[in-house]
Amino acid sequence: MATESDQPTRQRVARSILVNGPSTAAALAERLDLTAAAVRRHLDHLVAEGAVDARDPRPVGSRGRGRPAKVFALTERGRDAFDQQYDDLATEAIRFLAETGGEDAVRAFAERRASFIERKFPVVAADHPGASPAQVLALVFSDEGYAAAVRELPVVGEQLCQQHCPVSHVAHEFPQLCEAETEAIGRVLGTHVQRLATIAHGDGVCTTCIPDAGINKKERVS
Image (cartoon, rainbow, N blue to C red; front, top):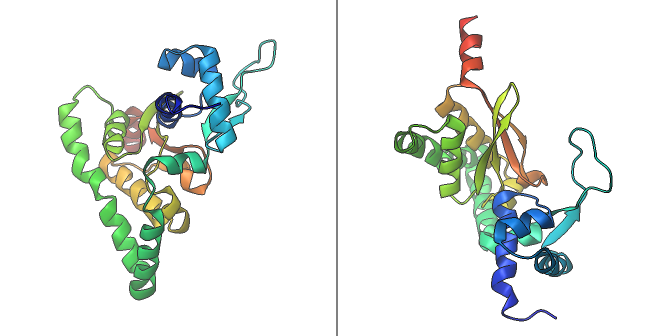
């Protein structure tokens, strides 16, 4: 039976999944310095509450013997527990904006909201001269509550991964919010970028492909 003292640790487990993405029980135990048994107990409660679900891992390369460990991912309900209390109000406000000002007004609002990317990018880049453009973007987005990180992609470049989106419920109805962010990313990088997945449309994470600067340079020269 769950006790009140369990809540802080359970929240740590949930937040670790939020920040690091879908994780196995073993990875959570190592990350949080807990026993595997303790992590599994908290995961069982989170699954029962509907905050987390267990999924089969995506196959990568050749499989070894035995069944691969389940990965645990936050559900929409699990994300709600963090900072989406005002989604209904925000959605209602943008609906009113769409009804009174039309598509152009919604688009202008989305662009203004995404302006933090172009405003903060040069400042963060100057503060972290050794960071790649994708790493700078991760810092910019994390500062805005997106829990962003970077994953290297072979040949192509890097992938910006946003494990959390504070406006995902609103963006589900108004994709202009995601579109404005993607366009702002492209402008600060000076190249076309593509969103491969979004939390707003049911994916577990928002991912954006960031082409390698060297590849872009060669393409411009040729």
